[in-house]
Length: 258
Figure 1 (cartoon, one colour):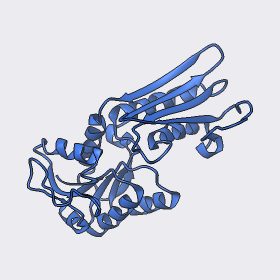
Figure 2 (figure 1 turned 90 degrees about the vertical axis):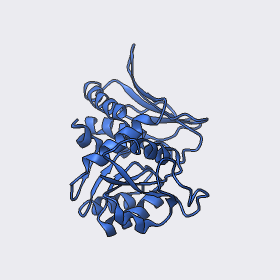
Figure 3 (figure 1 turned 135 degrees about the horizontal axis):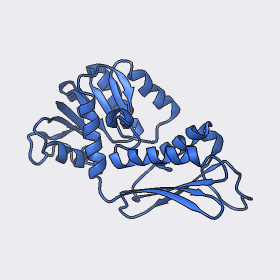
Figure 4 (figure 1 turned 30 degrees about the horizontal axis):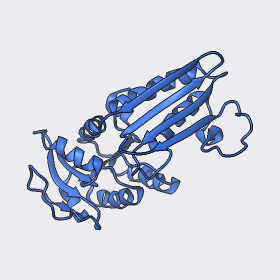
């Protein structure tokens, strides 16, 4: 299977490349990076591929694994459509219009869009779904997350997915019940809301906790990432899942048969 990777000099991109180069069933055919990257032209260790900003090089790939930023992903999407290349999208922070573009593109190519490709995180989402169905009333819910200081979107895409999972189990939409920030004299907490708390600092890979706070008890469901290995393995598994698929929009639930 011929794979392309975008954001190849970044944390996730470089980690994905290192892992896929060890897999004899996968071939790295292009390593994309931003046109402003100082690493353009640099050869990737263990391969004859150099970092490039030439999006036309996607014509050689079966699938692109994309962990960049929304504007970059949407640009890459247009070239994937041009050359009929499937996509694994791990980018977060999209606008509604950008999400609609991804949805429309999935009618022509196969796309996995996941806020988090970690197998453990997706197992955690299933636990959160179950807990939310049991703890539908009498519990205040708070989502806490911590990431490294370079992360640009807040809350994280994973936190939002957790909130959406809880809201769906409650039969409401997340915007109806989300409290995104608190400051000043906020008054007492409104029942049935989902609060979000965020920390940014250091080199934290990613911590996520959901608290169900009742009277006399507190249930906590937590996932902590100590490395990017789980995200990388999940992203590569997702790309393999798309092999021979012509179109459609999929999630990690499809990949993991959850």
